Image (cartoon, rainbow, N blue to C red):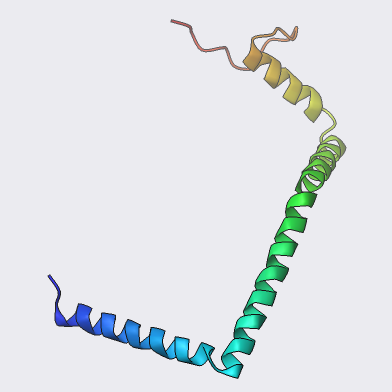
Length: 104
């Protein structure tokens, strides 16, 4: 059901649209539109550049993270490998700290 509030909102929206259309027809409006198009093009170029660099960035992040982990916890690599092996069901020669869950 359409009430007065909805009708007023529609009329105000339509009036704003007409005013914007009229403004964009002026020299100042056309300049603003060209500026917006230029900025949008710049943002698109920047985003495409960021996408191209993303694989390199993640590789660098992975390498730096690995080096930092080794530096601050020399046994971390062995611990993580043991953990992965225990998930895969491989025996590492050492008893796991928690027993595996019972199988049905």
